[in-house]
Image 1: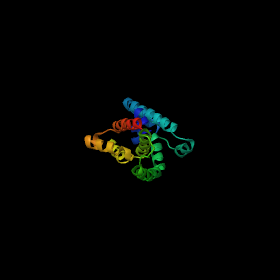
Image 2 (image 1 turned 90 degrees about the horizontal axis):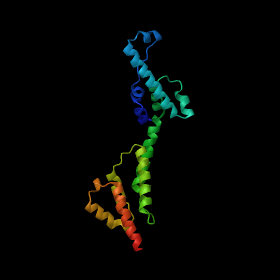
Image 3 (image 1 turned 60 degrees about the vertical axis):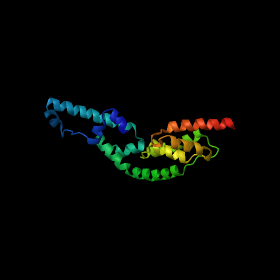
Image 4 (image 1 turned 180 degrees about the vertical axis):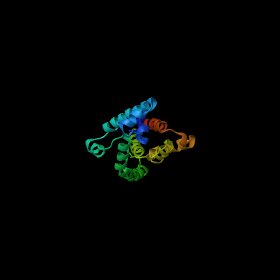
Length: 184
């Protein structure tokens, strides 16, 4: 949602808010330039509220319905989801363990294993983990089926694994897998 608010040039209003005149008289007393800034900020605030409302279900909407500005709504939502951050951390710990235990199955194809790895990687990234291609590549190389051991050694010895992209690795492994399948 932050990205969408940013693309609509509303994120600053949501994060920092704006000063609303205390009364109609105070608004009328503003200089013309001040009125224009105030109206632009009010318009951005209304736009931000609309965007936020569209991303909420009815139950959550009831929680924030009494808030007046997009900043107040955003703060209420953050307060509501503080517990969600704790759950994310717990989920991430579980995913890290699963990632480390992942091994290619004997009958599994490289393509299927790649899909399984990337599903796990994407889940980890959604929960806040910053995984590099180097870490993913290293994980794949050490968790391949033993029939790929000599290919993994050749790749590790001949290339700089920390600069090797996951897609490049998978292409090399798929080419080798096809050679093995032709022989069998």
